[in-house]
Image (cartoon, rainbow, N blue to C red; front, side, top):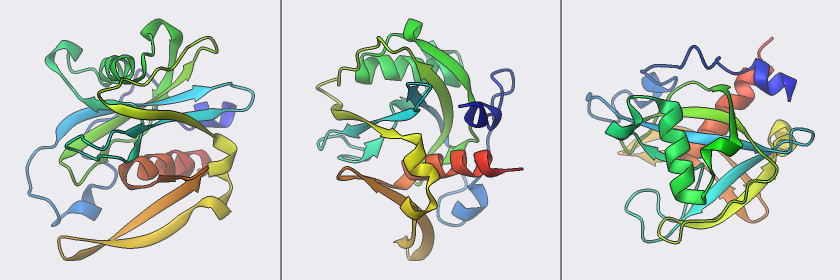
Length: 197
C-alpha cells in the first residue's frame, strides 16, 4: 500500500490537461478541448488491496457493456474539482457514501477517444461501505486484487485500428472480465508510476 501511495500525485497537486497520452491521440481526434471527467480508483482492504470496477449497462450511449471505474463527466455542481466529480459519480453509480471514502491522491490525466480528459482519483474505501449498482447505469460491481495487475504476465499489449490508424492498447482479463480501453490505460499508468525508481 505504501508503494501505491508514494506513486500518486498529492491531493494538493491535482493534474491538469493535456493527458499523458495526448501525443498518442494527436491526429486521431479533432484538435478541440476535451470535456473534463473524473473516475474513482477505489481500494478495498489496505492489507490486500483490491481495486473496485463496474460493468456498464448495455443500453448506455458511451462505453456500453464495458468495464469501467465509477465516474463520469464533470458538472457545474462539482466546482471544477475532479475529486468532487469522482465522489458524486461514485455515489450515483454504486451508492458509495463520500464519508466512507479517504482520498489518497491522483494519477495523471488521460484523454479518451470519446472526447474526455479524465482525472483518476485514488482513494481508500472504508470496509463497511456497501457497494450497490445503480440499476440505470451499472450492471455489476466487482473487485480485482492489485497484486494481479502487478504481475507482468497478466498484462497484454495489442494494437487496435482507430479511424484508419493503429493505436497501441493494453488489456487485463480477470474472472471473465475484460479490462481494456481507457480503464486499462489508467491501470497501466498506475503500474508505471509505481515502478518508477
